Length: 370
Image 1 (spheres, rainbow, N blue to C red):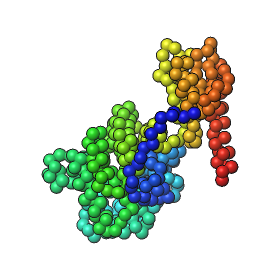
Image 2: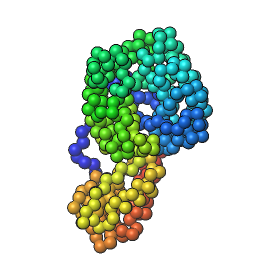
Image 3: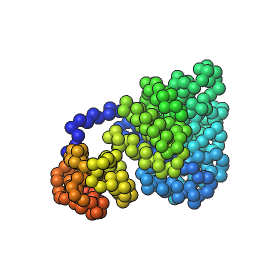
């Protein structure tokens, strides 16, 4: 049984582009990405980090290419990994060309920062010849001098003007395989910039709060900013920027999407914060379950509640549920129906077993449909 109240988010209509073999925009699922923090030329470290991000569910991985050694290294990185690679380029047009020729699926740069029209033409030709998309990436901290002089400081209007200026360059060159971002470290500035930009372009939008901070503060800021925009239907791909392990960015990104019903991956655990009524140690139990169920990629809902105040009600709305309250035992629910009493000492293994059984049922159902 699902919650009877469900309001589907109506997404903004945007163009659909391809980043490697993955569509972005239109009616495509909202994608989640992160960025490596290794030295790109250190092939072993970079490849290992890309693979860890793949395992976490990343749809794309961005890699910085500050020099020729890095842009050339992409060829080996692309060959050893599966996820589409986005090359992060700043200013030097040759790095963009090298990255496209090395197999990058997308180039993140601002056309207006590349230099003369001839250089922009060369980069766009390389992107077109190598089926490479482009992300116009506007940041409040690096706006063009003329725009800053006009607006006096970074503002939503300044960021949108910068984005549209770069977009017009690509439009003039008849290049349409691009997406746009307008990021700032300020949540309010970012949200307003995206809202204004969404009215001015049909391009897919890449969402994020840049330089959001550490694990806790960065997660909060990103969730508020990205979440606001997603609830208004704005956003086609997201990156949560954290001063933390990049894998955590993927986890938080999917968490944001799951909380809004926009995309589901892995086990969604609904659990209480616990109180004096709890019939077992809820916090430790959830930690253990998160670890034991971390390998699951199929969508499953699980409720873990300490007592019978809200437990049975939550269990009605999840595929697997456990509610404490009995003497050293609790009630196990499957699809909202009571199944059996279960001892607290056995509940973790029992819950894991029934979640995995749910996965098998779903996999068999898919096989039968195909």
